[in-house]
Length: 510
Image 1 (spheres, one colour):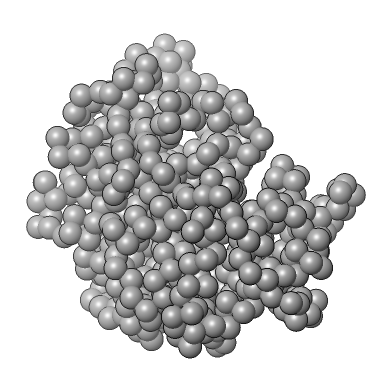
Image 2: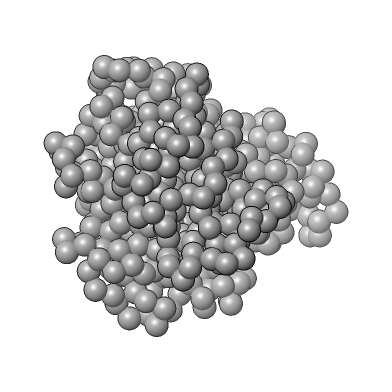
C-alpha cells in the first residue's frame, strides 16, 4: 500500500465516529476527515488542474486544515511542501520558486505578504486561504479515490532550517513516512484509539511528522494555534494520554511555567529534539514531569528517526552513570544503522569522535534539484549527518556538535557542547552558547555567550572557576559576552553563525 493516505481511509472505515482532529472548539471525526480529504483531493485535481507529482506548499499557522490538506495532497498523488509559517515571505517565496510549487495554501494572516512576494512569478501558482469561503466551496467538489503511488514517490519535501544559507529540500517518500511511523510504534509508544496528540509546535515540522503515526493508530489530534505554556499545561489537565513534541527551548519554558510539584496528570509522553537538551535543563524537566520524556535524534533528511533516548533511559538515580546517559541521545532506532566514521568513511572504535552516519528506509532519496549536495550527503547508501559524536560500548550515541561548529585551537579539537554543559551548571546561567573566534596564534579561541536568569548574575571569575574545576584549561573560554537573549531561528535553534558574525565585527584579539 504505497500511498500513505490509504492508512487514513483504513482508519476511517474501522472507526468513523472516533474523534480525529480538534481545533478551536470544533472536532471532526475520522469519517468526516476522510470525506473532506477526498473532496479536497478532487478539487486539487479537478478545479485546480494539478497533475501527479506537482508540489503544493502548505504555509499556515497551526490549524486543522493543515492536516486535511496534507492528506488531500497525497490522496491526489501530489507532493506536499510544508513550510514554517514564521518564515519571512521572502524565505517562503524562495521555497515556492525552488520547489516549482503549482499551488500555495496559506492563512488570512499571511496571504498579503506572500501574494506580494509571489507577484510576477511565472507560471503563477494558485494561492488559496485555508478556511476561506473559496476553500469551503472546494469542499463541495466530487470526492476521488486514493491515487496509486509507488513507495519511492516523493510525498513530502522537507526544507531544512537554512541556518547557513538557503534551505535545501529533503525529498521524503511514502516509504520513508511509513517506516518513520512504524518505528515510532516500535520504539516510542503504543498508541491506541482516543490517545491525544497535542500540537503546539509547528505542524510543518516535527509535530506534524509525528501526527502521522498517531493518525494511523486512531489517535486524536488536538491542534493549538501556537505555543503558550499555560495553554499546554491546561491541556495536560483537560485530556488524558497526551503526547506532545517540543523543542528543548519549549521544554524549558514549560518547566518555568509549571513551577515545582506539578503532576500534569494527562501527560503520557513529552518527546523533544531538534537541538541539544542540556543535562541541567533535562534534570529540572524530569523533576516537574517525571520520566515521561523521550529524546529523539533525527534530521529532515531522516525524519525524527536516527536514535532515541527512551523513558526508561531517562529514569535513574542522578548518579554519574545516569547523568552521562542523559547527556547522550540514546540508541539506534529499530531498523536503523548508526555509525561513527572518520573522514575516509571507515568506522571508528568505541569512544572515538567522528561524523555520525546512518542508513535505513527512513533516509531521504536526496535534495530537490541539488545533485551536488545530494552526492555529499548520501554516500554508498549512508546519510552523512554533519553531526560529530561518539558511541560507547553499549551503543549509546553522544553528540558533540555540528561539524561546522567544532573549534580547532592550537591543533586540538574542542567541542562547544562540552563547555556549554559545564557553564549551565552555574545556577544563574539560563542559556549559553560557545563558538570559536579567529586567533592569530592559535587558529581559534573559545568565546562564550551567556544569558543569566532574571535578577541573577554570574561573574567571569565564577564561570572560569567552574570550567577549571570540570574541563581542561585549554577548553576554558577566553572571553565572555553577557547578552539579554541568544539569536535563534524559527525552530528554536541558536544561530551560532549570527554569534560568529557578531565577533567578526569586533577588533581581533591578539
